[in-house]
View 1 (cartoon, rainbow, N blue to C red):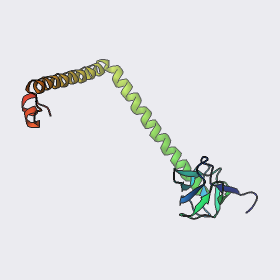
View 2 (view 1 turned 120 degrees about the horizontal axis):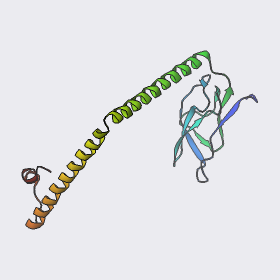
View 3 (view 1 turned 120 degrees about the vertical axis):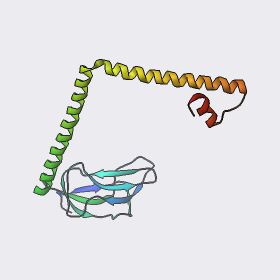
View 4 (view 1 turned 90 degrees about the vertical axis):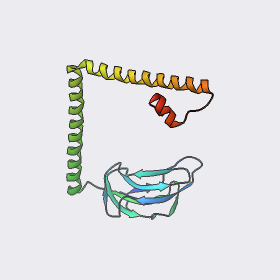
Length: 168
């Protein structure tokens, strides 16, 4: 392969792992991949992991196909550094615009919640008070149920619990 091409190698995964099986190539030969995007998934007896592109480029050669085994540090393919094609740049731009739109929407939602809390600070207190009251009531029901069980020395059937205490 050309000296400009980057070797795609199986990384070291620890002393006990010596080989891994190629799971799935996420790109085909001749296809562009952006830097840090996953090229291929690998599987060992202890882990499943992805190998990312060291930089943007075109996968020029795949040496190991899905299902084949490769040794640690073995070259399984080559990546030729290249700029993203215009179509990929447009798609990346669209993705960034969509991501910014979602971030703006989330920021506006949080700001609206904060404004609502500022307008009605007592509402949060009321909600927490109601929740606490419900928890105390459930605890009291459970205590009464425990007393009956201890007094009778037996377990109540579910329908008896519902009838006596309004609970399961």
